[in-house]
Length: 60
Image 1 (cartoon, rainbow, N blue to C red):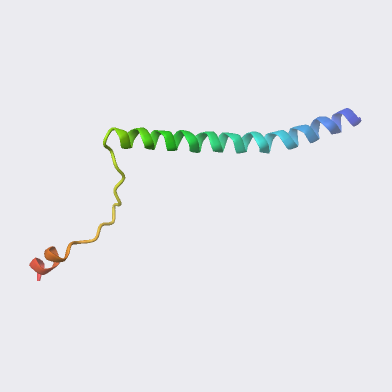
Image 2 (cartoon, helix red, strand yellow):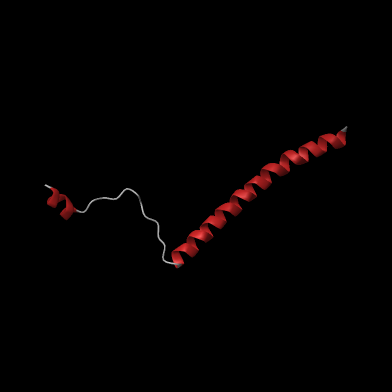
């Protein structure tokens, strides 16, 4: 009876710890991928851009 309780407690403790490790590994992989993409010349761009002042004056 006590060994079953200890097994369940061990599983309850180990599963959250492993899930945290997977999230850290995925975050590290994404950061490395972004770093390598930056080396190749890719860069992030915001889809929302601000118009320049000279473009606004031409439209009026």
